[in-house]
Image (cartoon, rainbow, N blue to C red; front, side, top):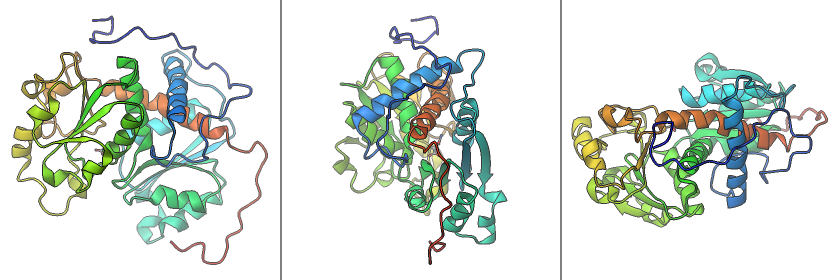
Amino acid sequence: MDASGLPGRRELPIHRPLMTSPAAAEPILKTSHLLGIEGLSVEEITGLLDLAERYVALNRGASKKIDLLKGRTLINLFFESSTRTQSSFELAGKRLSADVMNMSVKSSSVSKGETLVDTATTLNAMRPDMLVVRHQDSGAAELLSHKLDCCVVNAGDGSHEHPTQALLDALTIRRRRGGFEGLIVAICGDVLHSRVARSNIHLLLMMGARVRLVAPRTLLPADADRFGVEIFHDMEKGLAGVDIVMMLRLQLERMSGAFIPSTREYFRFYGLDHQKLKVAKPGALVMHPGPMNRGVEIDSAVADDIEISVIQEQVEMGVATRMAVLDALSRGLATEGRPARVARKGEGAP
Ligand code: NCD
């Protein structure tokens, strides 16, 4: 056990915090948007994680701010409620000195019937440099990336992808385990509705981990086996010998009809408690993207057990990861001003 009180932490290399904006920063991402993990390369993911590591060091210092995005405007456009993701993108932008505007759907014209594209093109006319978007429909972020002049970051689109969550999970795992090769990760619970699961499956398989999905049949996509994962319907079998247990929230807001008999019964069979964890590898880590339904998918005693739960560390890694993503995307931004986009006929329509 180390000084942090958590088992299994390997010695980490010392990363120099970024004190100033790097003069000639190397490109990390090949694209000007971050829409998903699918399509990224191992080098791009590793580059983002290495950069995020330097932001962890910066965030742990007394002065957490650099002028990298000074003069740039970042808009957070959230059509679904969010605590962690929105606040960590806001902090990430502010720590890089961008001007950050938060817009949530309740205060926008969408509640008055404006379409997603109309809202976005209106914001685009205000000339943001980056737009972070969360939306209930899969594909929303990609649609906006075609309509807007700025970089678009997908902060969760329906049940499709949530790339920065998978990246921050990866950073947490890499810091704890040193890498991904050969690790067995069980992703448990409501895989069907989870964009977190989808992004993590892509990332973990690409980085050399083995992935198991553990869920009742009703909460797995029909084509789950095509992902190249192992599938289990029983927690005891699915958790046997795993290094990491990644729990998912039961996404009741995305369920129409009954996917589970009752949350009590769900907890009995699929809720993570110390008893079910006994079959995992000793010292196996427990993760959850939050928000948690305590007593539904996870027992409080496990969630709050600092020997095994890295849930708060995931939140910390979230800010550093989002700083790295904003930094990487900003490297592709023009340093000169750009001409105003002229709306073409029919462009306001979805
Ligand atoms: C996740 C999300 O919104 O997809 N939460 C998050 O971003 N921290 C997972 C969830 O809502 O269950």
